[in-house]
Image 1 (spheres, rainbow over the protein chains, first blue to last red):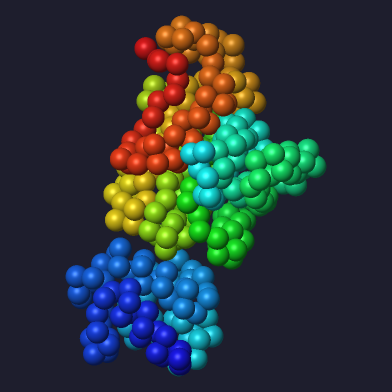
Image 2 (tube, one colour):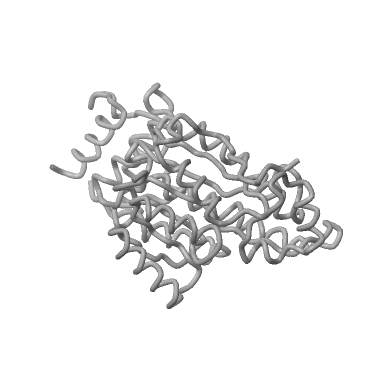
Length: 79
Length: 247
């Protein structure tokens, strides 16, 4: 599984959405991605990539695209 | 056993209430991460003895709760083990001799809040991520009867009252993850911290105490075991006063 597939899978699993909803998806744009859903998503991503996200990154994680940016920049995850 | 197979993280374990909580929780079958400020041979031996006696893991983690970087490093050390955390007991605290606000340097207030409020909040922020992942857990904060009656100095009374607000809010935030958050408010307890209380203050406290004595650390620890266990599974956002009945 590629890193992008793992990343997408985390969203699908944690937020119970379909992959076609991912592009452009923003925090709090859908009911499932509220603060509780956000922490569930972070936990799923941490497990998937074996990382521990900093609090600042959890706060900055405001969209599907921004999340990729953060993982690439701060956790050396290549997409 | 009430806590068999569970893992607890307990701060401020080297003595007093924290050590009693560690003793009681391991006796009830919990493995533990025991946080202490610095390495100590006697405490290391104590942890090894608990481990052998009860057949649980007791691992020491060192952190100075005055230093936020040290708090973060300690939490990361625990999280790196990938062990699911079931229980967090935020016990660490510091108290200074009684004095009026007019005679209290703000630096002392900030130092007290750093240890009694901010570091515990930061530590909870980090450790609760493990509980969120497991979608269950119990967090117990040690507050104080001083939060209700101002029975200690200004920074301690105010800090311990802040903890109660934190408990109420965290219970709301973490309830969706199956995590319960409660507090214990001990009265004057027979610990080293209780020992810095002046005789005058002790006498005043005893005069308002129905049971006319100080609490034992084990009596507070038993309340922590109750709140950590499934016996309290329908309790969250609450404060248990374990103070001998203060009038």
